[in-house]
Image (cartoon, rainbow over all chains, first blue to last red; front, side):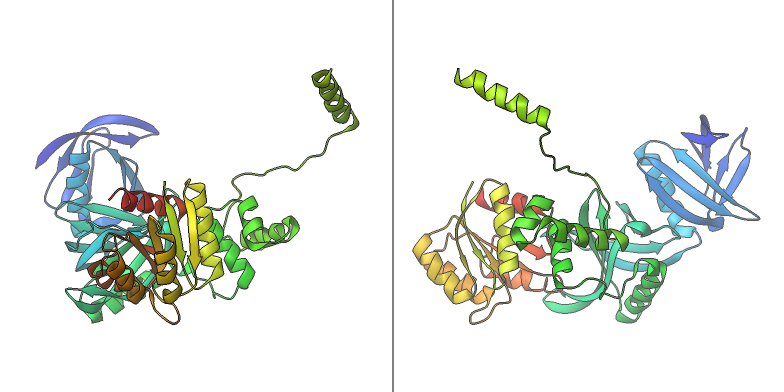
Amino acid sequence: MKEVPAKIEYNNQWIVIKLGIGEDRLVLPAPISQEILFKAVADVAERKNVLLITVKTDKEVVYKILSVEKVLQVLKKLILGSCNAYRLMAYFMSPAIRGGVMIKEAAWEKGSVVVVQSGIWFVSATKQICVPVVDVAAIELTKRDVQGKPTEVVRIDHVESGEVVSSLVLCPLSTLQVLYNFLKETTKGMDMKGTELDGIDQQVAMLIYSGMDSHAIENMLNIPHKQLDSIYDKILKLGLAEVVTIRREVQLTTKGVRYISDATKSQTN
Amino acid sequence: MGKILIVDDTLFMRTLLKNILFSGGHSIAGEAGDGEEAVAKYKELKPDLVTMDVVMPKMNGIEALKAIKALDPGARVVMCTAVGQEQMVKLAIKSGAKGYIVKPFQAPKVLEEVKNVLAT
């Protein structure tokens, strides 16, 4: 058993502990005095540098652990290798596309894909990448050129800091189909019929995706402000977008008109 | 900043790319709606960079890319296609494309790719 320094949240406070890391468990010393069996871990998530481990026994307990990157990497690898999850050996490429631009240096990595309650993890000897389920934008079975042959892969799109990032998973077709179905099931709350938006609504949505503001959208599609507003209402109601800024249109009051008139006079005198 | 020729068979995508490229300080040399027109406009306008859709009527983007490279081996062409057609990447790169963007795209990433390709 190795011991490493770490911080853990206990009674809403971060305390420093010597975290014991064994082959199949973590040992949390006093005042927590608990052992966490990796196989009892139901969920693993990462928020910035904090590792969140959810253990389900009689009740559900979430442990928040903070440590240096090297320690967290070891923890993630050990836990993801044995926790209660859907796991398969696969090749993956993550990220493969960012914001619509192919990443030239992206390469296939041998490892595993681990699907837990809150996320999809890509794990290799050097990487542990987590795609939170709530950030998944699309899952698709598609074809990709692999060693000169068009090959079936699963593409997972997720939103990261406002950018759409695509990852690819490659494994035998039968497994791929199982993974695809499993991921679709995990993220089914996000599914839509695809008929909710009509032609112009979809164009507006694509322009928003591309980063255009209201003024640019009105000009590009040659639509009045009121029409764009009602399309925004539809998109907002469907939960496809959120309001980030409200821009106001104003007109001068009599006081304002007088002020500008006076200012103009003083400039011309 | 560069002078760019936009090639796409849909007015919507051409307008979108034009807006994105304008916002990045680039100027638009011209637009073309198919591969044949793209080759003709390339000869006429000599742009610094071409954004080229792949699936187009008359002459597709890969054929147009090859024709432009035959005219000017130093031509900078960024291919632009829809999700699911990424297998065209190798063919396009083999045919001389300098970059590749996948629709739908996000403005900052398009500008970054264009900047990188213009720097080559």
